[in-house]
Length: 345
Image 1 (cartoon, rainbow, N blue to C red):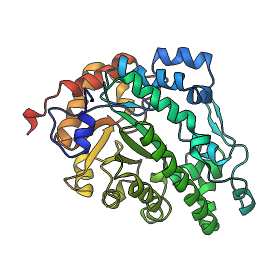
Image 2 (image 1 turned 180 degrees about the vertical axis):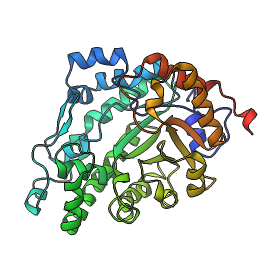
Image 3 (image 1 turned 90 degrees about the vertical axis):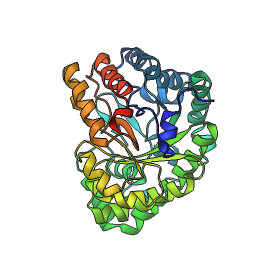
Image 4 (image 1 turned 90 degrees about the horizontal axis):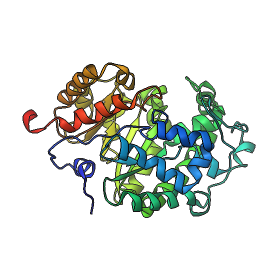
């Protein structure tokens, strides 16, 4: 039995005494305890060693007091499982030395047996669940197929992913073939996470907002929809398509239990697009956590008031920044926890 099931109750549409709160990238570079492990172990070593992944996953639960743990891993473990080399250079980001550009490149990758290639993730989940001992739910995740294609074609991070977009526009058949391979792998991977014990899964489409509405609903949403259809009867599903606010209504139609939004859309407008029944997650600007604590507290209360209480999970609009102090992260979480929903009804 979970001692704190606020997140799950909200996602199931139940009324709760307060808003649940967690933060994207909450297990990471802003925590001194994480930096100690980062100095000792390489990034993928941390991901691929269940004991390390478990320790890092639990850090924000122990230190910050969030209402959910999120698995410490990376979206690029899926391209690795498909057969692409992925390097992660600290402070520079990911490098994929042999990206997909042609039909011949596509033949270099294959849909894997996830129990073999990603078993370290499932082992980490089992260990995390054991060590959490029912304190809070565990969130699993994967990257959306469009976002993974961006890295697999571009070969590195980018602000625009022009090469990935050009690949889709000039070789659409090849692009859809790659998107389907990623989708099939992701479905198997997330089902493995559920089997191992996660309580919720989140699909991260970090680069969805680089597409027009029409392109998002051609290149991204159909594949997200396949994932949601495969998972929604087995577990609770959140879609976070950063910047793709224009398709909130279409994302609701997938049957997902929650939708993440960033800080560039007002909660009231997001609610108009998404309707009154879906859970919205977000949407505090991570940079605002650099403000003085009294400002953080004031802005968090404003965010909670703007969301109107129920059908909301408090979160950042993207990942926490590495230069945020632990005290400021705690101020965000504690302000949410102390804000009663009774007075907002």
